[in-house]
Amino acid sequence: MSPRPEPPQVDRVAASRAAVAARRARAAVKHEVATRARTASSVLEAAWASADSPEASLRVRELLTSVPTLGPTRVAKVMHDLGISESKRTGGLGVRQRSSLWNYLIDREGTTGSTRLVVLAGPTAVGKGTVSAYIRENHPEVHLSVSATTRPPRPGELEGVHYYFVDDAEFDRMIVDHELLEWAVVHNSYRYGTPRPPIERALAAGNRVLLEIDLQGARLVRQEMPDAVLIFLLPPSWEELVRRLTGRGTEDPAEQGRRLETARVELAAQNEFDFRVVNTDVAEAAREVVELMESSSSRR
Image (cartoon, rainbow, N blue to C red; front, side, top):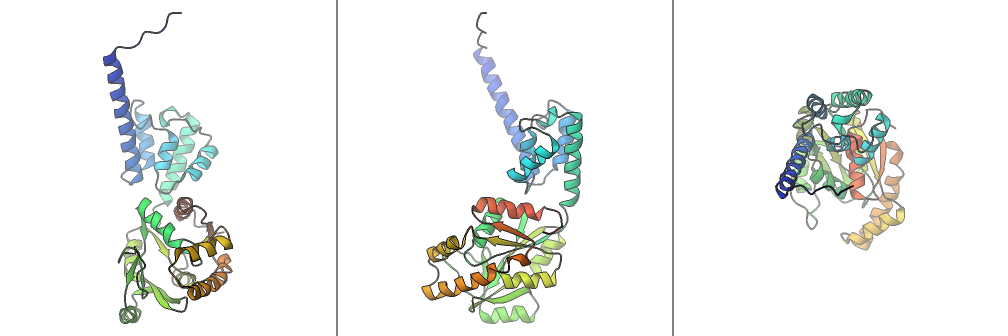
């Protein structure tokens, strides 16, 4: 058999340009889904309406991972449960696969708009702030509450981004005017609290809200808002927690000792929470937290 002739150079250039255009079109579809400009079910409708559309050439895995808060682990399980292979494209699904995928997305889109208030708490130095920062940077659809505190800022912390840094007089005023959803004295030193008005505005707008607070604050939020979901962030081990606390260098040895004693007490309260997430890897822990915000209202 004679070798297949090479296509003319002009054909190769045209094919390359077409491939680039197709990738850009698929990327635009995924961006629209990720930013909630359109729903995943509307992508399926477009894919099944035209076999030549960019929606039809999109892999199911790519579509599902574009859905906000659906991480790779969840997507892999969903596709396994629906009997859809990793390589399958939306336009190439069989009748039963189309039906199961459509029903899954419709059911999910019908519930993700529900308002959710989620509290993330855990012992000192477990990495609550780092996980929250990752969520802030990578999941803009989640409204992250900013706490007020009377402690001075640490290096790199920004006003209104990490905390609202206020003096004792202003914190007293916020308490008197009922502007705090919860507040507490942490580590027998500074006060921390959650400003109520931004939370209420975000919930009224239908947004999912994440509070990163301490154990005392989590208990108070549960009293004020019983429907709130509480997530406890755990270290991989006690030794790792000690390493993180002593390694960050933001407290003197005496303060480190006090915080470690507090951490032992806080770890003993983890069964009060609805979910537990181990912070071995920041990105994975953040993904688990965001996925839990999308989970059903049933609690462990």
